[in-house]
Length: 267
Image (cartoon, rainbow, N blue to C red; front, side, top):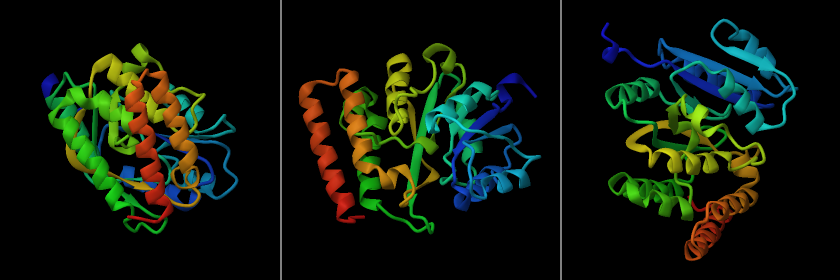
């Protein structure tokens, strides 16, 4: 096979702590990709539920470790440092990667070798796998569509909101050599800050219209449990990246509107 026809290897890092009731679904969603050049690294933070029993069932198909860590960001960085794939992504233990995603990601990086990072679409589900928050998702999709056509607006959109979802975003492994790893002082918006760093180093991501993942929001997830704190941490990061004051006002207004929508159960 000619070098230009070869598909890249992909490493997916999965942080987990006591998400045993979702963990197997997440692992199976990766194994069912049937992608031959896939490395799965599960970084378990010393779970006390059934997580380790589940991991042991997949011992031959995944790489995993269960040990105390300093939280999700620390677990992710441990996995990223061990990853050997050409392409890197991460999937939380309560999320799902949709069939065909990794083949689509690989084909995109293969066809466009200049691409450094890419992001796709997603759906939002609840603890039972039922669709939720569709108005918020469509609102964010509209923002991604704008950036897809006008990449120069990436920093404006990111300064107001974070419309990019982590399980549908992938990047080349070499970026870690150039821009480092996730910031471990951030517990809720480490991905948001990572988007800023990737943008400053490489420009806007390639945005594709394919739904690649299911992002789960439930009462035990960070997205469902710490929504207000997440927006406050996001505001702080936006300030650090010197978002203009008028844009920060839009950011604050946006946060208030979205918080109101979630509090009223508008979906």
